[in-house]
Image (cartoon, rainbow, N blue to C red; front, side, top):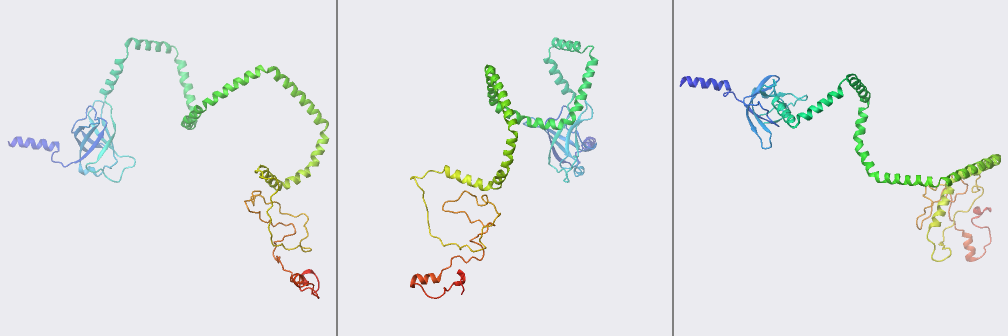
Length: 382
C-alpha cells in the first residue's frame, strides 16, 4: 500500500495535480487532428499552462478549456492573440499565445474567453482534399489535357520568357496608376448603373440618328441644292458687305454715343420695360376706361430761388434693384429717392406747410390796410 501510494503521489505531482491553475477558454473553428488534453500552452516559447479538456460546441466549433499558471497569467494581456499550431508537419498541436502590437494594460483574467485567429492545416487534411479532387478527375481526360498543354508549350520557352518579361514591364508601368485604377473601379458600379438607366434613351438616340441618316440620304439632292444656294448667298453677302464696308463702319461709329447713353441708363430702361411687361400681362379691367384713386394731401414746400434750380449733369442714377422696382405692393408707393438733382422737397430745413395768416384774415374779414404780417416770407419789407 505504501509503494502504491508513493507511485500515485509521484504520478499526481508529475501531472501537476497539486499545482493551482486558473481556467481560460479558447474558442476555435476546429481543434485539429493532433490536439489532445495536456497539450502545452506557450507564450514566447515559455509554457504558461496546458489544455485541460476539449469540448465540441453545437455550432461545430470547439472550446479548449485551458489550465493557466496563475503566476504567468498577470504577464499576459487581455487582448492576447491565440493560434493553434504545431512545431512540425506531423507533430502534436499546441496553443501559441502572442502579444498584439498594442497590448492592453489589463492582464488576462481567470474565466475569460478568447477567440483563436488561426489553426494550422495538417498534412492529412491536405492529402484528403487532394484525394477528393483527384477522385473527380478522369485520368484519360487529364492525360489529354496535359498532352495538349505540353505540345502547346514545346519549343516556346523563349516566347514564354519574353511574354513574362513584357508582362513584368506592363505591371511596372501600371503600378503608379493602381491608386487611380482602384478609385475608378470603386466608382465604376455607379457609372455603369447610370449608363444602364440611360440605355433606353441612348437606344432612342441611336434610332433617331439612323432615321436622320436615312433622311439625309433620301434628300441628298435637295441638300446639295441648299448648300449651293447657301454658297451663292454667302458670295452675295460678301459683296454687299464689302461694297458698303465704309458706310457700315460710319453707322457703327455714329451709334456709339447712342449705345453708350443707353448703357448708362440701362437700369432705368430695364425697370421701365419690366413695368410695361407687368402692365401688359395683367388682367384687363372689367369695364373700359381708367380708374383713378385721388386723395387730398398737404402741399409740399414751394420752390425757392436759387436753391431749387435744376442741376446740370446731376448724378445718382436709378435705384430699381434697391427698392424692388417695378414691383409695387398693393396700396403702396415707391419711396422718394433723394438724388443730387437740385430740387428736394424733403431736404433738411424745409418748413413744410405754412399757414398764410393774412390770407385767412382777408378771406374772413376782407382786405385789411397795411403791409402783410409775413412780409419777410414773400419778399416784401417788414
